[in-house]
Amino acid sequence: VVAAGVLLAAVDSFEIIITGRGAHGAYPGDGVDPIVCAAALVQGLQTIASREISATEGCVVTVAAIHAGNAFNVIPESATLVGTLRTLLPATRAAVKEAVQRICAGTGAAHRCGIVCTFGEGTPSTVNTPEMAELTARAAVKILGQGRFFLAPGPFMWGEDFAHYLLRVPGCFFALGVMPPASDSYPMLHNDRYDFNDHAIVPGVRMMIGVALEALTHFQNV
Image (cartoon, rainbow, N blue to C red):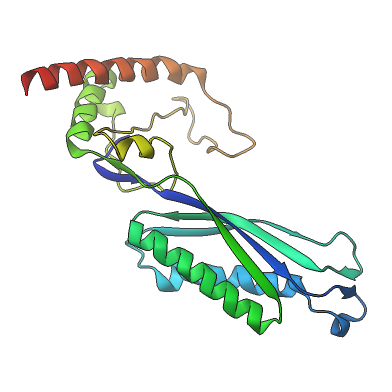
């Protein structure tokens, strides 16, 4: 699978630490519950993608883990949320981070909690050079056949370190399928049922060689 232009999303992580005041679970009025604040924050963060960012711009806000407390009858002092942001455009990336900070500040104030939000900057969007994407597509048709090559219907929200190379030199990132021919579905990455299909290695190596040869021919004729 390949496409010219934006193929994969920019990736950022976030950590949100919510500080309240611990108390006995039987006397919630004596404390400031960070778990209630965390629950409201999870709900609020979902409105960024659904209500602030255009559906055509591509945006994912995922809270992937919540850590708070360790006893059934104690309101903890703090709660921590961690997750990932996925965006396609630099302007959207900045807008989403601003929205996260704003929602954190407002939700914390509403629930009398202190909130500190920090971001971990990951990879930028993976943007394929049109010329190199076309070259890769030609190689794929020659090597794999027309029926086994597909143009991506649109960007995917994965992230890829290869994006850093594309900021500096023309290139193309392509995706290689690993689902066995007899299967109707296959687990995605980051799934505990995922198992790399060794049979994908041979077409993968053939593609890398084929793209290199196609590039040599192309640039010799330019």
